[in-house]
Image (cartoon, rainbow, N blue to C red; front, side):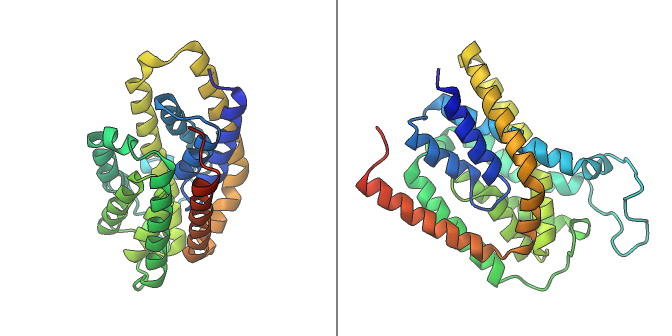
Length: 275
């Protein structure tokens, strides 16, 4: 059984990076390799604890989630107002089906990419895509996510497919994709965090079912520690990070990604990852 300290450290990394367009999966792969935490169980662990961070988003967006299922509350936009509620379950479906479909079909091939070398490629490629989204954004037609069209939602869903490459970043791909589709940075960020809930629930459920036979009592405790730590850290950070992503240009995060890729390359060719 892996040390519970490993679960704690990676849980902190996940909680801090899930809501920034820097690739939480990429960070967990890099840290996991440094801690010699690799293999099938490590990959399952990394997916499962992401659900802990996503639950933090579910708490922040609980009103929005319930509205999708027809619940009305005093904070919902009034019918006929300039920001009348338009977002519905079809928008969510169009945004999540492409990536979930590809992930289901190519899961085994995607798992082969969970290594530092491919993360470096993803960091660089994702950074470039984010810069393109920032610099090539057309006229904004969706100032908030209630104004997103079905076409824009599907475009965001197609952009999310890029995040299946570890290091690319799901939030980075979808925010940049949303901006290229004519959504404001804030609208794209809000929609990104909202669609993360069903995406990660589906991914976590699938991983648990797929690997249920290989889990032991010790593994369950290890998963629980990572899950809880990721949830608590994300809950403390989510409000600040959501505001940060909605205001800062994606270019700044691209610079961070390029710097991290350079540091990882230097580390790989000097010190080298264990094993």
